[in-house]
Length: 443
Image 1 (cartoon, rainbow, N blue to C red):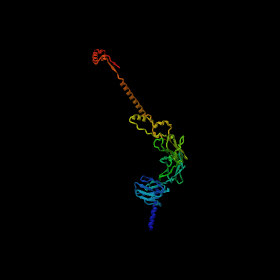
Image 2: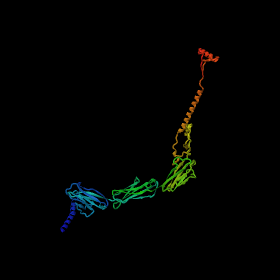
Image 3: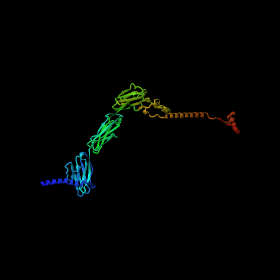
Image 4: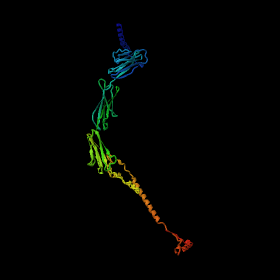
């Protein structure tokens, strides 16, 4: 038993003394060889780092791993250093792989893979410990903003290694911030980013996001929603009628107003005149019965809150009530249709209305654009001209038929003085000899 204990003690002493002796003799001229390779390691604090020493061509030389203080962690597959966080993962002639669990900032540094050859070969693995920042914090200069004003926000990411970077987003738009980096006594970094921007009413409820980028964390962010106050937005909606407004009909208008804070008052008024006495106003609704042309004018809805007031206008124009035209008879169908189509329509009376452009709504909007050429008038003129020409042709025809030409001759002149018919025939026959004395008259 005593011999066994003394043998174990001798082995331990050998493990400590032999590497030290080799190192003492070879530390003066270490050789960095491509035959021995390793990798740098970046590990988050509290997690596990893997250090691998690999030999491409080994001639049965001994592989060992040293810590930044050049203390032997592993000599072949044995661990002289009494730190249970180091564990052997793999050992062979070509690799020594060791794990270091629960890494802390004190473990950071350069680790040495050493191959005992003549001269000794070394490779270096740098362990970098990453420390993520604390939760980012957003601070706003103003909790409640007014439309058009400028505000400022700051975002802070504390105690990280290395220093974090901060980005800003407002909705889907990226903002440019001004970063400031501070290094503390314990080699930790605190980053503060400041951003300034103006707000509009569209920004109400939009999130402002502070995004922290760091190799130790992903999707690390904080957000703050904007609260923007703005003056009312006013819109007049025509509930009835859907088309033109005519005499005898009813009119119903609704005033829609929204703002932040909510509009406290909504009023109806008539520009340059009084609202009709029998008009009914209920909240944002205006109701007028039995319209007539005396109600024509501009009706305005006004809404207000502590940030200001806004309005919307509706131009009322009342048209004549629709009339029913009697069906034309068969005998007068052409004349009737001509007269009917040439009768001025209600759109023609629009020229008598002032040409001021309505601010927002106009009850004449459904009337359409006036035409520059009235085809009905042209058709009526053509019909009258054709009818006059027909009448003229009829009168001339009757005149020429009544005044036909009269034809007179003297061929039977002797018959005028004859006592009876036989004598007249004889005289007429005898007259043929004097045919050269015949004369003709044409009237």
